[in-house]
Image (tube, rainbow over all chains, first blue to last red; front, side):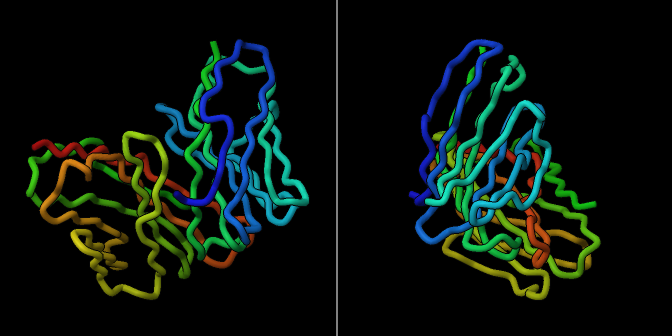
Length: 114
Length: 116
């Protein structure tokens, strides 16, 4: 168990809908990362928050947004969903916001858009 | 630009065989970190090892060993006496060490199948 909790584990929704994925980082970790894993794109970095502030953006679509709350949990909001958004979404956390520490991953949320 | 290449898409071995997973990286930074993660069929990503660019010593952890060679920009992973439980997708990843807001750059992964 990595200590990172993601809910829900599975989500099935229709095109055009909006969903929210939730992540609780490991105790003491201030940095939260969101990654998307799909068959064609592999594991891609979406966005990072550190202690409530956005730190870096990767290949995140404008239809997607995220935030980190004062208790350090984070939410990834996906709107106007398309079939191509079906993927495994991972949250990871680390102690600091720099790349020299390992990130620990949650079990992921498998999103299926039908 | 940073890039990680795992040329082996799939590898199949029989139990007790040794297997090496290749990883080649590209970066312009002199300070960086390399990682290996394992993704078993259950789907979670499990951290295996972190290596910094200044430490080229090979590392061994049980049946796992890692060979880091800066001269060839490679960070290969060997499993000795493979077991069925080693069946998983293995990802190599790279990150810059000290720049804020850095994330892991992953390779495409190597699917390892170990049969009994």
